[in-house]
Image (cartoon, rainbow, N blue to C red):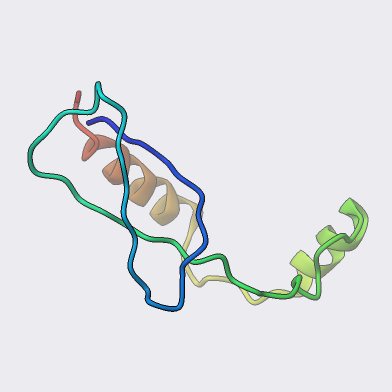
Length: 83
């Protein structure tokens, strides 16, 4: 798979025209447009590591054991294949 990335402004017409590099292959392609969000920083952004660990201790447990989590991770890794 080959990718090409551009930065642009979306005009009011919402229409884009792209010119790809000469070495970009012709044929089927998938086009994804990502809009930059105007999100604000999360409330916990910029906290110290000690503050993060204190916050983390206050979070509810997931309800899964370490063994269950390890098994899920192993299952996911096994599904990756050798591509």
